[in-house]
Length: 209
Image 1: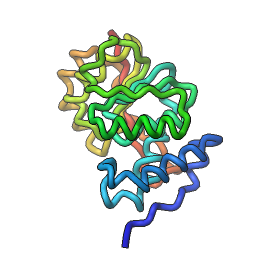
Image 2 (image 1 turned 60 degrees about the vertical axis):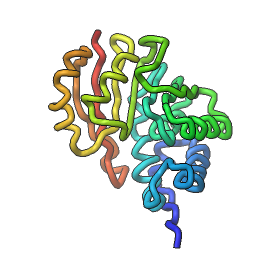
Image 3 (image 1 turned 135 degrees about the vertical axis):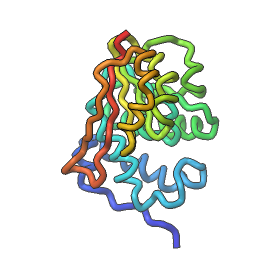
Image 4 (image 1 turned 90 degrees about the vertical axis):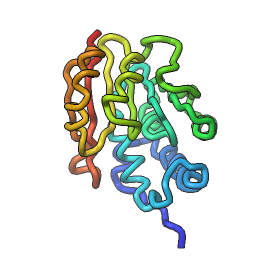
């Protein structure tokens, strides 16, 4: 028997407000096509809302101006955040063609006018330090993530990464990269307690120079 899509949690309405219908449509599309297109694993449907959609959306208040999601994959967190924050200009960077095709399809279907999809690796970005915020989720450990995200962010801009329970150890292991890329105010904020079943750990830093 195929896995059933998780029922929509009450928190979805809180996080998406008048954009909830768009979030529902994206979640339904991901549930219907995500596994066959290699975007999500076969066991994700019963926790798609809580583990992926709301886990991404809870970080929406951290973003402003022009933002980039590096390694966007299925659109987690970039497409979810673009739905939740239509006032932010989003660029989704993803190197795999089948994933960029998916992202572009969703942008068109959901009429997301605040999203640009770029097929490339983060280190191939040709336009310099133009972003106010860079984000990533489930891409790699900090010491390998920082070299292809921090150089995209203007001085004074922010890094906002959605991380797992071992984020403190990742920060320790990335001390050299934190210094190299001039990061300040490095911290971890746990968001969503009391609202989400699984609160989200958010790595925060300012790109000071």
